[in-house]
Image 1: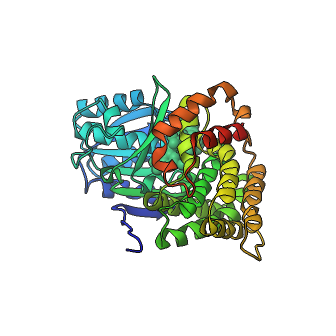
Image 2: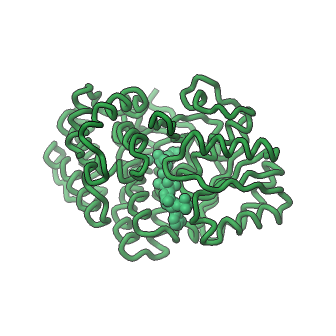
Length: 390
Ligand code: NDP
Ligand code: MN
């Protein structure tokens, strides 16, 4: 077998004013919706009210669950499950960033299984089945791809363990990318989430699960991001917003099939132990050292892939060799500088004495992603990379 590729079971709507379609789509899947959102932005900008209106106009009953924060926790998800069970919801609609969509996915699991003890599902000790409620995802950021992935990333607030889990039952049934919504992101969120999308496609492209279907999407997404991320940060316009939303969607499809590598395995751990560090920001600090590690230690095939990345990001690569492969790192550093993202974990508040805990957690919780890295790191490699990322 050359490769296997699973087609997501998600119906995707993409464009301006697509939020208006929500009610029509939702009524095909349920009668009582739990409408999940973040802390403030969607209500402040009026999109939450528009979503509710669209659902009610289509005849659905709506119960709201507001206040999902970045790096969402088990406690937040449990609150949503309790609300959903009390009101008899049979459908979950998420409008917000990746954190909101991820939290809503696990609420759909908990409500469907009538079980608010959800950590065992995340650790795969309990089985996620087709009792999971249908999910409709409406992203307000362009970075996690969560509207087209079967992943969710949740933090246990008591221990600081942050981990991803996947199930085909949490694929959104429908996803609505409304460009008017993602166009409201402020510059910092644009930069951090845009870097997340870039990380997804660079990782999926060199992953040992990469395949010819995602390779094409990864390279195209890298080109779109190279041409549009700085622009969308400095002076956003409809074309650059559309390009980033498209790249984000490609990236989600790519990581679902080809997964991520040690950048995500180690980065999720950082935001679990330090919940104030945004996901994209954590990845930004880890990406250059891990790219260098992979280029130095991997075989010809991966070196050649890093040369492709350099090219897609606008570098001139005449010959395929290790030296030219490092141009991909230079390109990433150039983009990071232009979007004002922090380059070191120390600047984000990480202290040296937490490296042991970060390493332990990565080896325990991040192995799904780490095992897809083109080079298998030893414990001391992980420690060294954390040190280099400070
Ligand atoms: P978040 O959802 O965490 O949102 C970050 C901040 O941006 C929040 O303060 C939010 O405020 C604000 N915000 C979001 N959208 C807008 C908007 N349109 N206008 C103004 N402010 C806005 O960010 P991400 O999308 O980066 O999600 C990160 C999470 O996703 C992490 O936990 C990460 O691990 C996970 N992830 C999931 C993946 C998956 O496949 N499931 C893949 C990769 C990452 P407010 O709360 O007020 O809306
Ligand atoms: Mn990510």
